[in-house]
Length: 175
Image (cartoon, rainbow, N blue to C red; front, side, top):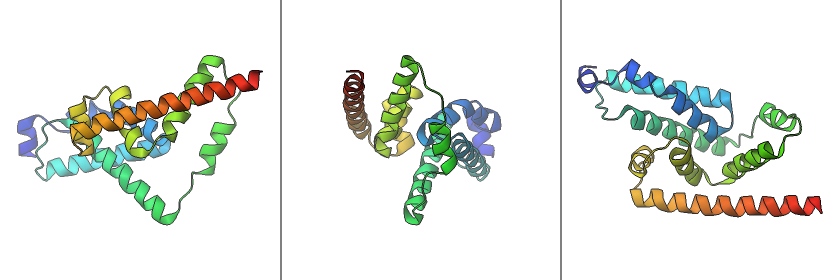
């Protein structure tokens, strides 16, 4: 813990990032309970590694990196097991009352983001939602900055296409 203390990273420094970590986890998973589990496990692992003497230069990047790796591991386990989306999550989304046009547009955007491949979605959410720099995203995801830029470009292009497709579908319904 001495190394970490010298660097100024410990419980209070990690706690500063809980809100943004949770916001990112919710956006990534679409499920508050799963997001809370990921955030909690990220904090537990970060504190354990710091206690073991891990040198942490940037608490924010360190936490987001742990959360990302936990998410990747979780998705891999689900793929191997064939785990489906929990029924409660589907029921909750279907049971919502009709929404106003601006909320509908927001909901369409959320669905479009959910439709992106995981790698593109992670980059997009870190940059757009969390305001992370390309370099921070590269460190969090352990990829080169050029890959961050190309994934972000592909994600934005796919989002535009999905949103245009959604707008055309909505126009057809109205006519």
